[in-house]
Image (cartoon, rainbow, N blue to C red):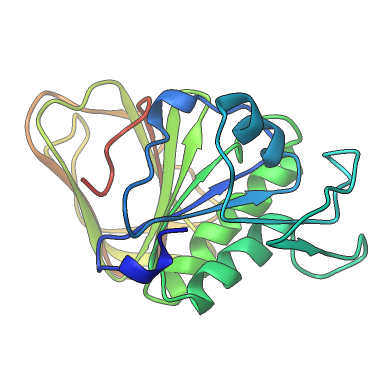
Length: 218
Protein backbone atom coordinates (compact mmCIF):
# COMPACT_ATOMS: atom_id res chain seq x y z
CA UNK A 1 0.00 0.00 0.00
CA UNK A 2 1.38 3.38 -1.09
CA UNK A 3 -0.95 5.70 0.82
CA UNK A 4 1.73 7.16 3.10
CA UNK A 5 3.29 8.96 0.14
CA UNK A 6 0.36 11.08 -1.07
CA UNK A 7 1.24 14.20 -3.06
CA UNK A 8 -0.84 16.73 -5.00
CA UNK A 9 -0.36 14.53 -8.09
CA UNK A 10 -1.24 11.25 -6.40
CA UNK A 11 -4.10 9.36 -8.03
CA UNK A 12 -6.84 7.17 -6.63
CA UNK A 13 -7.55 4.52 -9.25
CA UNK A 14 -10.97 2.87 -9.18
CA UNK A 15 -11.46 -0.26 -11.25
CA UNK A 16 -15.06 -1.14 -12.14
CA UNK A 17 -16.69 -4.21 -13.64
CA UNK A 18 -16.98 -3.04 -17.27
CA UNK A 19 -14.26 -3.39 -19.92
CA UNK A 20 -10.75 -2.31 -18.93
CA UNK A 21 -7.71 -1.67 -21.13
CA UNK A 22 -4.90 -2.54 -18.76
CA UNK A 23 -2.25 -0.70 -20.81
CA UNK A 24 -3.25 2.61 -19.26
CA UNK A 25 -3.20 1.36 -15.70
CA UNK A 26 0.11 2.28 -14.07
CA UNK A 27 -0.13 3.23 -10.37
CA UNK A 28 2.89 4.93 -8.86
CA UNK A 29 4.19 5.49 -5.36
CA UNK A 30 1.59 7.51 -3.49
CA UNK A 31 -1.33 6.21 -5.57
CA UNK A 32 -4.19 4.10 -4.21
CA UNK A 33 -6.10 1.35 -6.03
CA UNK A 34 -9.69 0.43 -5.20
CA UNK A 35 -11.50 -2.45 -6.89
CA UNK A 36 -15.24 -1.80 -7.08
CA UNK A 37 -17.03 -5.15 -7.05
CA UNK A 38 -16.39 -6.95 -10.38
CA UNK A 39 -13.37 -4.76 -11.02
CA UNK A 40 -11.53 -7.16 -8.74
CA UNK A 41 -11.49 -9.75 -11.54
CA UNK A 42 -9.84 -7.30 -13.95
CA UNK A 43 -7.07 -6.67 -11.43
CA UNK A 44 -6.76 -10.38 -10.68
CA UNK A 45 -6.20 -11.11 -14.39
CA UNK A 46 -3.52 -8.41 -14.44
CA UNK A 47 -1.85 -10.05 -11.46
CA UNK A 48 -2.49 -6.97 -9.34
CA UNK A 49 -3.83 -6.88 -5.79
CA UNK A 50 -5.95 -3.81 -4.93
CA UNK A 51 -5.30 -1.76 -1.82
CA UNK A 52 -9.02 -1.99 -1.07
CA UNK A 53 -11.98 -3.98 -2.38
CA UNK A 54 -15.51 -2.60 -1.98
CA UNK A 55 -18.93 -3.63 -3.25
CA UNK A 56 -22.08 -5.61 -2.74
CA UNK A 57 -20.43 -8.25 -4.96
CA UNK A 58 -23.42 -8.79 -7.22
CA UNK A 59 -21.14 -8.32 -10.27
CA UNK A 60 -18.30 -10.41 -8.87
CA UNK A 61 -20.65 -13.27 -7.96
CA UNK A 62 -18.65 -14.35 -4.91
CA UNK A 63 -17.81 -12.73 -1.61
CA UNK A 64 -14.01 -12.60 -1.21
CA UNK A 65 -12.31 -13.18 2.08
CA UNK A 66 -9.37 -11.38 3.60
CA UNK A 67 -8.28 -7.96 4.76
CA UNK A 68 -9.09 -4.61 3.17
CA UNK A 69 -12.57 -5.66 2.04
CA UNK A 70 -15.67 -3.56 2.60
CA UNK A 71 -18.95 -5.34 1.91
CA UNK A 72 -21.81 -3.02 1.01
CA UNK A 73 -25.54 -3.77 1.16
CA UNK A 74 -27.29 -4.43 -2.15
CA UNK A 75 -29.88 -1.76 -1.41
CA UNK A 76 -28.10 1.58 -0.94
CA UNK A 77 -28.05 5.14 -2.21
CA UNK A 78 -24.45 5.17 -3.47
CA UNK A 79 -23.22 3.05 -6.35
CA UNK A 80 -20.15 0.94 -5.63
CA UNK A 81 -18.10 3.39 -7.69
CA UNK A 82 -19.37 6.47 -5.87
CA UNK A 83 -18.75 4.77 -2.53
CA UNK A 84 -15.18 4.06 -3.66
CA UNK A 85 -14.75 7.70 -4.71
CA UNK A 86 -15.90 8.90 -1.29
CA UNK A 87 -13.44 6.56 0.40
CA UNK A 88 -10.62 7.91 -1.75
CA UNK A 89 -11.57 11.46 -0.84
CA UNK A 90 -11.61 10.57 2.85
CA UNK A 91 -8.06 9.29 2.47
CA UNK A 92 -6.96 12.63 1.02
CA UNK A 93 -7.02 12.00 -2.73
CA UNK A 94 -8.18 14.71 -5.12
CA UNK A 95 -7.30 13.06 -8.46
CA UNK A 96 -9.34 10.08 -9.64
CA UNK A 97 -9.14 7.82 -12.69
CA UNK A 98 -11.97 5.34 -13.10
CA UNK A 99 -11.47 2.30 -15.35
CA UNK A 100 -14.22 -0.17 -16.16
CA UNK A 101 -16.93 2.48 -15.88
CA UNK A 102 -17.93 2.93 -19.54
CA UNK A 103 -19.96 0.50 -21.64
CA UNK A 104 -22.29 -2.29 -20.63
CA UNK A 105 -25.43 -0.94 -19.01
CA UNK A 106 -26.14 2.63 -20.09
CA UNK A 107 -27.56 3.56 -16.69
CA UNK A 108 -24.29 2.57 -15.02
CA UNK A 109 -22.30 4.70 -17.47
CA UNK A 110 -24.56 7.68 -16.80
CA UNK A 111 -24.20 7.12 -13.05
CA UNK A 112 -20.42 7.20 -13.45
CA UNK A 113 -20.61 10.44 -15.47
CA UNK A 114 -22.66 11.94 -12.64
CA UNK A 115 -19.90 10.77 -10.30
CA UNK A 116 -17.49 12.96 -12.29
CA UNK A 117 -19.83 15.91 -11.66
CA UNK A 118 -19.85 14.97 -7.95
CA UNK A 119 -16.06 15.20 -7.94
CA UNK A 120 -15.79 18.53 -9.71
CA UNK A 121 -18.39 20.02 -7.34
CA UNK A 122 -15.94 19.19 -4.56
CA UNK A 123 -12.85 20.66 -6.24
CA UNK A 124 -11.53 17.27 -7.30
CA UNK A 125 -10.51 15.99 -10.74
CA UNK A 126 -12.01 12.83 -12.15
CA UNK A 127 -11.68 10.95 -15.43
CA UNK A 128 -13.54 7.96 -16.84
CA UNK A 129 -11.36 5.92 -19.19
CA UNK A 130 -12.53 3.09 -21.45
CA UNK A 131 -13.94 2.04 -24.81
CA UNK A 132 -11.42 4.34 -26.50
CA UNK A 133 -12.83 7.37 -24.69
CA UNK A 134 -11.95 9.73 -21.88
CA UNK A 135 -14.71 11.62 -20.06
CA UNK A 136 -14.30 14.37 -17.50
CA UNK A 137 -16.26 17.23 -15.92
CA UNK A 138 -15.24 20.80 -15.20
CA UNK A 139 -17.06 23.44 -13.17
CA UNK A 140 -16.29 27.18 -13.44
CA UNK A 141 -12.92 26.24 -14.93
CA UNK A 142 -11.37 24.61 -17.96
CA UNK A 143 -9.08 21.97 -19.39
CA UNK A 144 -6.20 22.31 -21.86
CA UNK A 145 -5.28 19.87 -24.62
CA UNK A 146 -1.94 19.48 -26.35
CA UNK A 147 -1.52 19.84 -30.11
CA UNK A 148 -1.09 16.09 -30.63
CA UNK A 149 -4.71 15.30 -29.76
CA UNK A 150 -6.72 13.86 -32.64
CA UNK A 151 -10.29 12.87 -33.32
CA UNK A 152 -13.65 13.92 -31.94
CA UNK A 153 -14.33 15.94 -28.82
CA UNK A 154 -17.84 16.69 -27.52
CA UNK A 155 -18.89 19.17 -24.86
CA UNK A 156 -22.22 19.08 -23.01
CA UNK A 157 -23.85 21.20 -20.35
CA UNK A 158 -24.45 19.17 -17.21
CA UNK A 159 -27.79 20.41 -15.92
CA UNK A 160 -29.40 23.82 -16.35
CA UNK A 161 -27.18 26.36 -18.09
CA UNK A 162 -23.45 26.75 -18.63
CA UNK A 163 -22.50 30.34 -19.45
CA UNK A 164 -19.26 31.85 -20.64
CA UNK A 165 -18.28 28.77 -22.61
CA UNK A 166 -15.10 29.02 -24.68
CA UNK A 167 -13.92 26.40 -27.17
CA UNK A 168 -10.59 27.50 -28.59
CA UNK A 169 -8.25 25.68 -30.97
CA UNK A 170 -11.03 23.34 -32.16
CA UNK A 171 -12.69 23.02 -35.56
CA UNK A 172 -15.86 24.70 -34.30
CA UNK A 173 -14.91 27.44 -31.81
CA UNK A 174 -17.22 29.15 -29.34
CA UNK A 175 -16.68 32.46 -27.60
CA UNK A 176 -18.61 33.47 -24.49
CA UNK A 177 -21.38 31.07 -25.47
CA UNK A 178 -24.25 29.62 -23.46
CA UNK A 179 -24.89 25.88 -23.48
CA UNK A 180 -28.03 24.31 -22.05
CA UNK A 181 -28.80 20.76 -21.01
CA UNK A 182 -31.61 20.46 -23.59
CA UNK A 183 -29.57 21.39 -26.69
CA UNK A 184 -26.52 19.27 -27.70
CA UNK A 185 -24.75 22.09 -29.55
CA UNK A 186 -21.30 20.91 -28.49
CA UNK A 187 -21.47 17.40 -29.94
CA UNK A 188 -18.91 16.16 -32.51
CA UNK A 189 -16.31 18.90 -32.49
CA UNK A 190 -12.77 18.04 -33.63
CA UNK A 191 -9.15 18.57 -32.69
CA UNK A 192 -7.21 20.30 -35.49
CA UNK A 193 -3.57 19.80 -34.52
CA UNK A 194 -3.06 22.88 -32.34
CA UNK A 195 -3.23 23.49 -28.62
CA UNK A 196 -6.86 23.76 -27.54
CA UNK A 197 -8.94 24.58 -24.50
CA UNK A 198 -12.47 23.99 -23.21
CA UNK A 199 -13.57 26.38 -20.48
CA UNK A 200 -16.71 27.59 -18.72
CA UNK A 201 -17.10 30.66 -16.51
CA UNK A 202 -20.24 29.49 -14.73
CA UNK A 203 -21.68 26.00 -14.77
CA UNK A 204 -20.55 22.43 -15.32
CA UNK A 205 -19.47 20.83 -18.59
CA UNK A 206 -19.11 17.15 -19.45
CA UNK A 207 -16.27 16.67 -21.93
CA UNK A 208 -15.79 13.49 -23.98
CA UNK A 209 -12.94 12.82 -26.37
CA UNK A 210 -11.37 9.94 -28.27
CA UNK A 211 -8.19 8.72 -26.65
CA UNK A 212 -6.81 5.46 -25.33
CA UNK A 213 -4.78 5.26 -22.14
CA UNK A 214 -3.87 8.92 -21.64
CA UNK A 215 -1.18 9.97 -19.19
CA UNK A 216 -3.69 12.34 -17.60
CA UNK A 217 -1.80 13.45 -14.53
CA UNK A 218 1.70 12.88 -15.80
